[in-house]
Image (cartoon, rainbow, N blue to C red; front, side, top):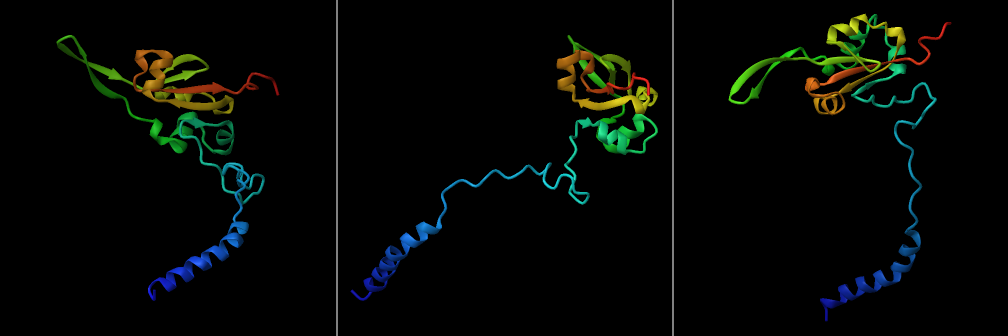
Length: 161
């Protein structure tokens, strides 16, 4: 009986305290917390949202001091600028050496390789998007197996000032 007395005392205390603990426990769900991208929005010291790794926005373009689009991409998303590489593709029993490159599209038109980014006036660019090989092949075809950089002009770029 001596060994059971402390156990019974603990059990009795738990029964006495249980209703007061239950009253302190709130079972209603907490209201949703704001997303981190909007937390502190409008404050100059608020943390900036993490940029999309596959997109350069008009705001990023406007805030960056780049002279040309190639420099902008090199500075903000350097992973996009892979050098041209050589790949081997199998055609039957023969192996063929094929040069593969990242392709640049501008407003829906294929304009060439990475060097074309230097020729696009940066002040007319609305956004720049990177498509990996899988997405680029699905959208544009097999020649885009290394991916594409898709440049979209600003909508107001053709309007006179």
